[in-house]
Image 1 (cartoon, rainbow, N blue to C red):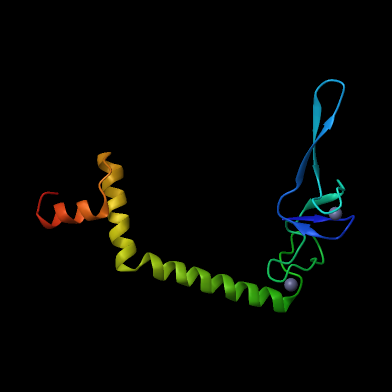
Image 2 (cartoon, rainbow, N blue to C red):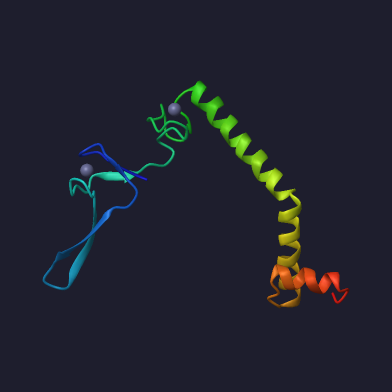
Amino acid sequence: MYHCSACGREFLYAKVYFEPRPLGSERLLLCPYCDSMDFHEKKGEYCSYCGRRVPHPGAGYCSDSCRSAGEKLYARQKEQEEKRKNSPLYKAVAEVDRYNLIHGCTLSYGQYYALKGAGML
Ligand SMILES: [Zn+2]
Ligand SMILES: [Zn+2]
């Protein structure tokens, strides 16, 4: 995410512009809204939760309430990730991936469990 200081808007991708020069052309990155080059990457300087400017670079969050809300959100995401990893389906899929990796083959999940069920693995 980028933030343009000239027009104050935010965008994900800068506009690429090739400025003609006597020898070839120069590649410039511009704000897609106002063509300004006065923009910078939003990283560390904006709140990870609400997107407002943080008091000092690297703070991560703009306020304590955003920090606790953001950390709660993060904890919930982690918890869901853990749950997903512990689900029988995920484990089954991971087992096939591991088998394929170790044996250098590309069995589908169906093939793997058919062979396993038949006692051929
Ligand atoms: Zn702009
Ligand atoms: Zn915030």
